[in-house]
Length: 103
Length: 225
Image (cartoon, rainbow over all chains, first blue to last red; front, side, top):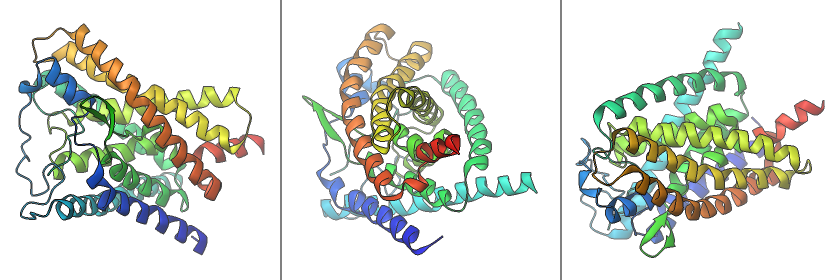
């Protein structure tokens, strides 16, 4: 991996952090297509709480952080970092499988 | 303040149908893992990981589509254009897994339903749409972004139809499946426009800077050489 690549990957990561950490606060808070239809057509009440509904990051906020902008932004940045860890793990595993099968 | 939920919660679809799609999704994810293994190299692996990261971030940005309704990126066409369908399936699955487990967005029993609609239907629709559209368009970088955008536009209502099918098979609500399907299609055609715009600008930016890393572009070079 050369320097240009590293810089490109770094930009990609930084843009994601800015979107999740700062811009996300300005996202529309209206229900999304599915939730709105469920509400209009009267089946929203069939939804059940997820088993992890009490997660400290539930619904993109950090439990205990009262400042709205900070709470949403922090949850976004945590999400970006966790997604990065899991995704790099999965793709490293996939790449390893190839080496295993060709050698 | 919390952000809108993005995915199918638990309860909308009964357990047997959720389990069926859970099993189907596991199958498709395993196929994707084997397929991705063949296409990933030292240079494209980081892009695949970062594509998942970018999609997680971009999905948080709900945009208004109609009165009181928002939409958000799926990212399937974007990922398919950048890293190919197998890695795209894995990237979307990672995002859905993190959202369901950490953010309680998308139910746990519904995870298979969500993976099937977004990581399987939206990705493979995008893949075939990109292949067909690129045959028609001139062979240049802009065409890759245009093909990805058109694929993105198609992928959203089709993924939404995945939900309608799941609802028809195992919806717990009393409203009839045809009404749900019509409403889902109408709203998600609008959301598809937003999906197409975000996909176009993202794919165009990446392909202008680092076309050598882009799956949809490299493929063409390989065919030529």
